[in-house]
Image 1 (spheres, rainbow, N blue to C red):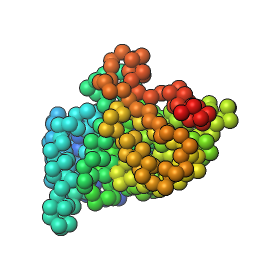
Image 2 (tube, one colour):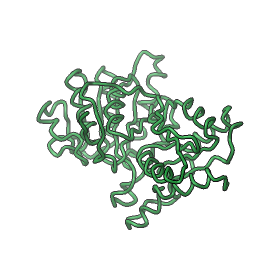
Image 3 (cartoon, rainbow, N blue to C red):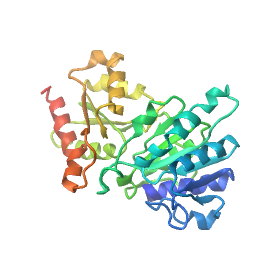
Image 4 (cartoon, rainbow, N blue to C red):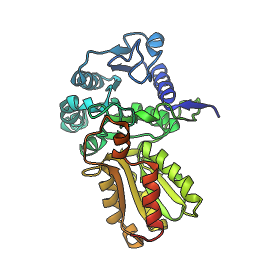
Length: 328
């Protein structure tokens, strides 16, 4: 099967959705001729024109508000926030409008919109362009939150998100854009709320999101040389969460390590830990549930400090090895 980069897979998904449905259109800062900050929308304005690939002013509140308004009239907008950090400026539109309208109108109105945003560190972009804020949205009833880790999932989840009649926050890690993987040419969907067992193993369950799935796979390859087999679980959709595969995996391995880039306090890992601890998997645990997450500091500009701020493959190897050896 052919391979595409993560960015190319997203672009193909957008192109296919726009070709199939004239109500789908794009808007965001510099997404037209420039092709977006990370090149995801490159060439689409030439294919579909400026009325369907709309360059907006630098106004995240305006982008989100326009998406909400267009969705309420029957369109299916896909907005782009240039950096996830600046979604902070659109919170009122997302939290008080997009998430609430369907419920406030008794289901007579819906907001079928997707808001794409690159998050995460690793590019040397420092404190104001490197945050991982996905759990802010997980806490809001009415929003769905998606974090694909592979090109295959990026395309399939994006198409499913565009089809969905609810507002979807679509989080793309910046370091994933150039990663490659097999992607079918057809217009397939990966269902929202379907957790994926990325790698089978028997000794430790590693629940990882986004870029941490890749780092967990690196760790698994190294630990396999020592006879330690990690089972890697990728939720893909953070909300609504399909926790059954996570619970079954922990029942099998008896050990759990949860890894994400966002800071530990208030992070998504806490929800995973709570789901495991309050399920039948608790009785199967042979060690405390462990978490690996970002440090409680803004992302530094210095590249070595930046790496030290968030989990790396070596950190996963260390924690998983201790769990497997019964050192906790």
